[in-house]
Amino acid sequence: MVKIVFSDIDGTFLTPESKVSPATAMAAQKLLAEGIPLVLVSARMPEAIYPLTDGIGIKIPIISYSGALALTETGEELGSITMAGADTARLLTVLESEYPEAVVNYYAGHHWYVKAVENERVQTEVRITSAQPQKTSFEERLAVGEVPHKILLMAEPELCERAERELSARFPMFHVVRSAAFLLEIMDATVSKASGIEVMLKHFGFTAEQALSLGDNYNDIEMLELTGRSVAMGNSPEKIKAIATDITLANDADGWARFLEQEIFAKEIAR
Image 1 (cartoon, rainbow, N blue to C red):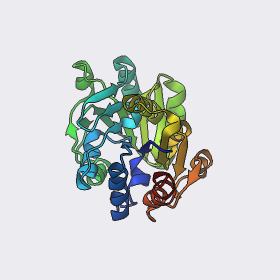
Image 2 (cartoon, rainbow, N blue to C red):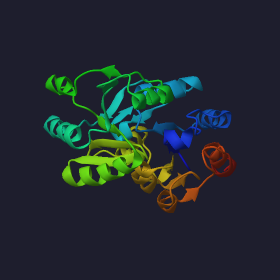
Image 3 (spheres, one colour):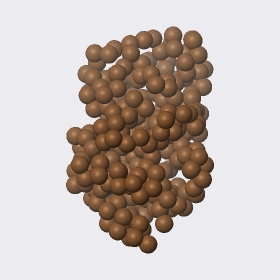
Image 4 (spheres, rainbow, N blue to C red):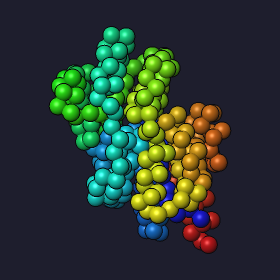
């Protein structure tokens, strides 16, 4: 029986318009009413997750930065893994010189730093997440010891794919993975959604076999492979569908809520 549910956000919990559908909101509330914890697991920063949970009236634990930061429902820190300062400085130099067309974002705890707040890609992220960036020098952040949980590149899909390949080989101390065609996430090599989930499972006293995860993209692979049951959204790439134990409808057809209603509420809670 499923004891805890872990869910990706973008492409999974949200519609293509980055909204929580009424059906998904009701299913999330029903999970909690049945005593089954729900944990949102995302590449997003905490301030880009809380507007979603507040909007549907729930207080739940979250795993942010693709596993680098785990917080309880009250914001208590359960786990935090940041990138090494010297390696980050070298990475930033490489990004500036060799990937100048990419927009670089620097995330540290509850802060999102950029070089140009008015940048079109940055403003698109603001509209999607409601989080607010701050203009600053990344070098200044490193100089005062504010090391990042994540560096995010925003660029055209071709560049993201090439950068993922090249930076993975060049910086083995980092985990480099696409969370969308135009987004490339860079964290410490020990970080993955699975590592964040393991922290949360220990907190709740559950095993991975008792957990269900839902996801749609490449940065969900470790999470889907870890949990006893795993669900790929209908909008997932074929590689992701092949990994999961189950496949549901796409996020534009309430696949998240439909799966819980048919496979969890109907079958498991009734036992």
